[in-house]
Length: 356
Image 1 (cartoon, rainbow, N blue to C red):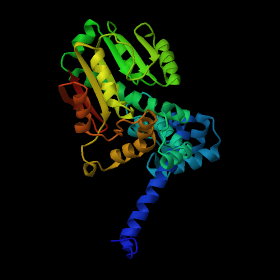
Image 2: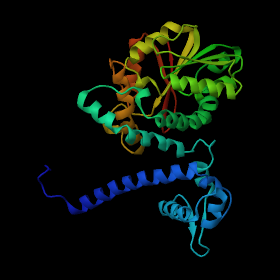
Image 3: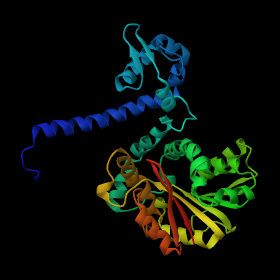
Image 4: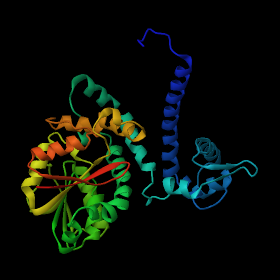
């Protein structure tokens, strides 16, 4: 059907409603951010049914604003509402997602990412029109903070208990003591999780974003792991050679302007018998097989974040966040690796074991 053909009214109504649902989700995100930052979710968590006045008192906020916020959350299904008592209640499942900052399901901080995407829209418009890149450090500061906080809890739940044990022999090497590189470490959450679990190994986090490296160093000091986890500004193609027993790429390879060069540098700095751990966003190899909520999220963020950063680095290969296993394997094949195995997967990530 071409654009001049008359629209099917039922299909038009259904698609229009879909777009309204997506807009409503954006509105809900603002409410979620307010609820987290103002302590409204913490006031509700585990407290049973509460009136608007009680929530306002517990959070030290103005009651009229709190009531309207509560109604918005109830309408969205983010809270329960009891009409007979005019009270609001948070279920344990809602608390795990909205109130427990240590839960692997905790989501409020992730809303910093679309907030940054909107704030950075002028840069995206210019990039589309000129073809220039937008480096990670050019984004609003909420981008780095939101991404770091979003991944932190997911890595905490999976990295040490699931992903590392899925790699042949790596746990034993970490327990015996090896040097580990975390390439593109960001705020250092993944580096510190490993450092705290394996005190006899030495961990080195590298990132091009100086502000993130400074934040990672602060996290290491606060965790008392500054002697085992060190951070420095370096690119994926020039970090120091320490004969690493393990080199990790956590959701970063697809952001690089030359992923093949990064893989080659990993090959040249890897100790004999060493392993590369590659964690990438979940994707299938074909566009038609990447549909649904997760792919929608990844393709959208990839458009203005991942691809934009890769282009800013020279863009020899722009993988994007939905590269898929075949393209990822080809990157490491070109770099001289011969072993490429899918070790684990989640609805959000693919985890690969790679060796020379």
